[in-house]
Image (tube, rainbow, N blue to C red; front, top):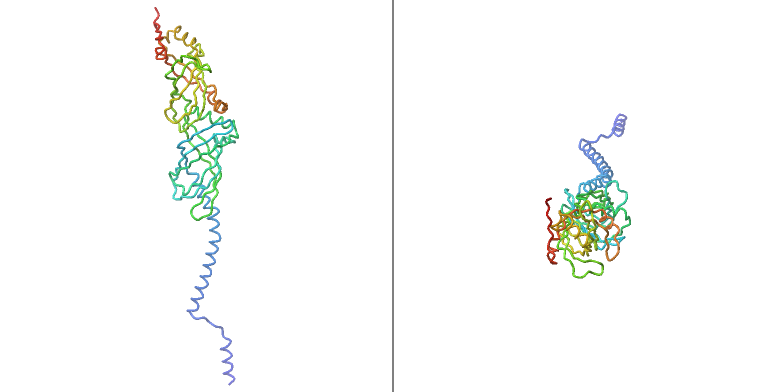
Amino acid sequence: MASAKAEAHHDEGAAWKPSTGQKIQNLIRNKWCIGLIIAIVLVVILVPVLLLVVYPHIAQSITNKARIIVLSEAALSPTPDSIRLDINSSFVVNSKYHPVLYPFNASLYLDEQASTPFVSFETPRINHIKNGSTLSISQTVPIPHADAFTAFTKKALSSKDFTLILKGKGQLQQGGLTKATVTYNQKVFLTGLDGLSSIEVKDITLLKEQLSDGSNANASISLYNPSVFTLDLGDVSMSLIGPAPNNTALGTTLLVGALVKPRSNTLSATVKADIVAIANLITQDKRYGCAVFPVTIAGNNVTYNNVDIPYYTAAVNQLKISTTLNLTKTLQDVGYGVVSLDTHDD
């Protein structure tokens, strides 16, 4: 009996050993828990990384690689401290992502070194931006920095080609992701008006009676604008200067209500011609007896609704354009014929 009790006591105190099946279940349960913990840790770490680092980086990369092509830009209704801008642009975007571009305040600078923008405007929202997406604005904007805007008008009027810098900070959003803040610093390549180098004075008609402002002739001015700019200039005063070496003042011409559009333009003008100076040039210089002679057109000033527009005046002041004035038909129309001097020495 004693030995039986001892044996029973030994069985009750022996360690419990799980079966093989139970061991496998425990292993799976432990690995599943570890896997779940690892997955949770990865989600906790990776999701913020994706949202805070990777996604904004992708958004900024899309922004950096995008290019802006200005299709048309009109500067209308100018005043000394404001102007209306109508701008149509297209995006060149090579990306599989098509985010929403939210409105932002865009500023234009003359170059990378410029610390002051010459103009700023609000951009609209663009849904699912992609290659060929367009951006259009029509806003009357202030001109808070007159010197910077004057420098821009000078560059646009005188240059063949030039580059502007568009800067700003805004947000874009891809699908259901959160909005990402991006910084815009884009180069915008533009063609300028090339100093109005193609300007010609044509169809000068002498008036029978002088106008109240002293004008004694009408003329048409032709010029080619190679840029995408439309400039609402108003009234543009220019001087006509005779050929060297005398550089005689021959009069002034006034472009009336000048609206310069892209490509070919024909503008109306009045002329205050110095008849005596022109007659002396034709009759006393045998080179110009045929009434065809070179002139220099020099810009004077620009007014809009009888108000001086200082940034346009400064821009036209720098213009010195060489062209040819042909008065043959003008003189024939009034019955004077043409004085033809012998161009050969005896």
